[in-house]
Amino acid sequence: MQRVHDAEFIPADYFREARREEIFPDSSRALEIDLGCGDGTFLLAMAKHHPERDFLGVERMPGRYEKVARAIREQGLTNVRVLRLESSYTVGWLLPAQSVTRLHLLCPDPWPKAGHARRRMVRMEEFQRGLARVLVPGGEFLLKTDDTVYFEDAQEQFDPMPGFTRASWAIGDFFYAMTDFERHWLRLDRSIHRARWIRSA
Image 1 (spheres, one colour):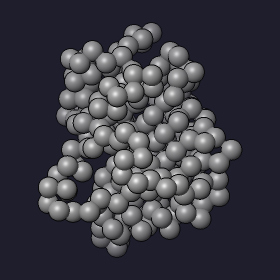
Image 2 (cartoon, rainbow, N blue to C red; image 1 turned 180 degrees about the vertical axis):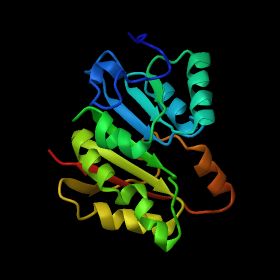
Image 3 (cartoon, rainbow, N blue to C red; image 1 turned 90 degrees about the horizontal axis):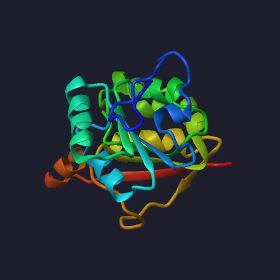
Image 4 (cartoon, rainbow, N blue to C red; image 1 turned 90 degrees about the vertical axis):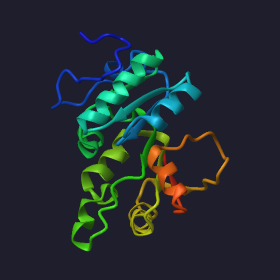
């Protein structure tokens, strides 16, 4: 039996859809997912700013995963946990259906070589199908990237996708923390592209 506020979310069974209350006990609260949460900069800042919401970070790299779990414990945050798992599988199979209010994909690996484009998260059928499954009606998919080709690819995938509507997203529309990667690219004068899609009812 998992502790209610343990920093790590370790599913009882990786081969079945998790129940919402396994991730956080109060299933009435909004749940946000940060895919590839890295060092947790964005994840922890969002959890602090929104104590009324729950946050789950997903990170497959063990060093980063352990760093985030340690930071959650040190900062005493009870509305955020981290899962060590591959992102597309998490969205495609593990997360409960219609459980996610907002899903964040921030500065993902752009796979810039033409032969590697199929590996981009936004192109994966598992991810696309899973995103439509896990978002609640009115739920949001938010993307940020410094890579123009990746951004254009994402728009080509999601703008015409049934069940999703492109929404405006200007700087300052709502609180949105930066990731460590975003800060790095901005210091190098790189542009950050952003897009937001809403899951229709």
